Amino acid sequence: MLLLGGMPASAAIASVAFAQLASRDTVDAEASASGGELSSNGSAARIRSEEVAVRWEPESPTDGTALAVTVQTPAGGGETRVKAELDGRPVRMGRVGGDWFGLVALPTDQAGPMELVVSHSRDGEPEVTRRWTVQVRPRTYSETQLSVAPRFTSPPAEVMERIARERELVRSTLGEVTAEWLIDGNFVRPRNTRITSPFGQKRVFNGELQSRHWGVDLAGEVGTPVRVAGRGRIAIARNLYYAGNAIYVDHGMGVFSGYYHLSQMDVSEGDFVDRGQVIGRVGATGRVTGPHLHWSFFAGGERLDASSVLDLRVPEANHAEAEAAEAGAGPSQRRRSAPAVSERGAQP
Image 1: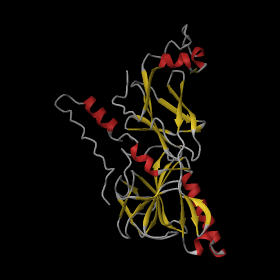
Image 2: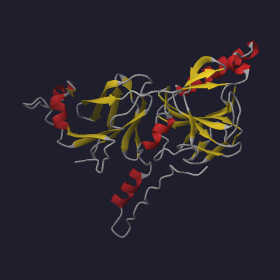
Image 3: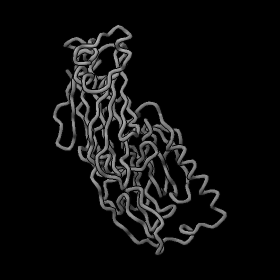
Image 4: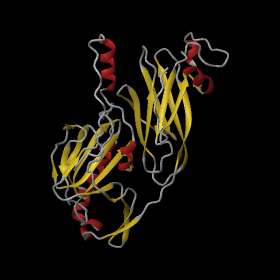
């Protein structure tokens, strides 16, 4: 029986036996055709009474933030498959640290109950599906007045083609899905400084409402370090009209982080970077009112509040390998895993 222990109040957890799940929810109709007789309660007889643990956090999130789903499945032979959806939108699940982990962006300005659906199957067994309700709370977004160079509110005709080309580059990049997680443990803050502009803020440029702020601005002087929030691959590292010198990092499974207005980029497209590694320097390039770091996060092509990922527990990639090594070693050969070290407060 697998259970997730030590859950804080901010996380919701449900552990249910496969036979119980099958009797209340969905059992693949092919179970009987393939030789598995159905029991009197409607569950397939050959589904073992083991447990799958499902956790989502935070338990009651706000709109525009990240929701993390972790599924821990029983050990055993056969290939395991896990699928998840939130209100019909896919939560891409992938293996990391021995668990199944997925991250989805909760839509901005949409609150209320949302249905989380998790399905699990293993070779030779019917698919089992379970449903829960996630209560999403509304949030209030502020408004700010900003003054920028006129060329950024009314771009000259000669740069419109460039802007369109760059938007398509970013859109297509964020739509790509690396079919595995590249992350390793909790996300970290790129700079340990104050937030100067929050996510979702309404932006009035030169007296005209033009946009929402789809990132988190962190204070910084030109030339101070910017660290990557999690392990991944550099997908974009180039100068963009609005974002200035900008870096986008692919963390796998359709999740990306972005770092804008840099004075210097210390990585190139295609590079792999480790969590907390310096990838650039704070600057004032692109559409800005002064030097700072604009930090963005995306899941499935949708924007989310980057600061919300700092409170999520992300499995460590080497966790499963360490357990496997210990299981195969004799008593004198087994070694303790190193304690997890939080880098959330990494210094700038």
